[in-house]
Image (cartoon, rainbow, N blue to C red; front, side, top):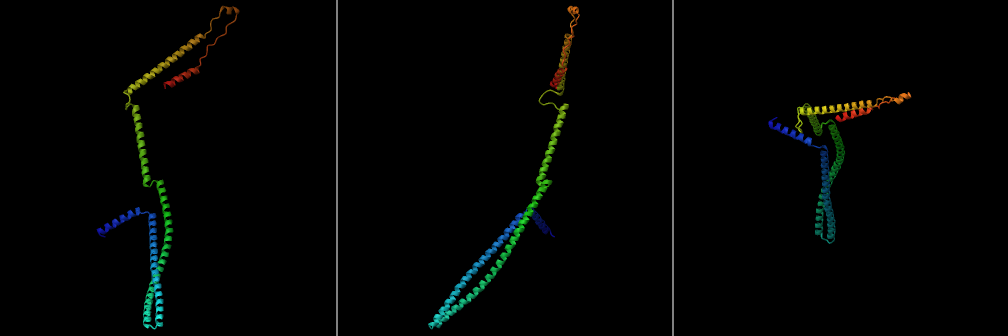
Length: 282
């Protein structure tokens, strides 16, 4: 195989592959069906043309037959008048018309034969078209069902180009999300370690830690103050609750005064206040 032959073969194979990918079987079947219908229409048109020509010849034949009868009558009239010469001329014309009639009959018979052939061809072609139409619809239904099944399978497996693009988009989104989450976690870690300063304030990490210590010391001092105040209050209450010495009148009567119990301190209220202070501090 020469270079030109190989190049021509490769080009034809490439073109054939492109055409196969671009070909839609349903459209091809519809086009073939339309071609058969056009051919059937041409056959019908040919039958109509042949029928028209045959009718014209038949009309011409009837006219010649009428002339034959006319020449027969003329010949009889000429014989009655003893004009043999006129009778001979009429019979000669009659003979010419008879010859033309025979030729027309042959032409009409030939046209009739062609018409019968075309009608037979038309009937066969029409039956073929009907069979092709049935097969065409069946093939189209099978192809459309197979195409739909392939699309569903591609969508489920992600084998199609569109689903591949969607899958790649999801993968890229997941990668970007993971990168952003890792970046946010790293920034939080660096900020907690003090490697990054807050851009909204001029205070350093040391300043913030000192402020937190000062706040904790202030809270602790306030807590101790509250505890000491509460301790002094309890001491005063115990002192006030001590019994007074017995009077002389009581001693003379020989009766003793009843012991007075100090008021009880509600420890639950104290605990509740401490919890409230702790929550406020938190």
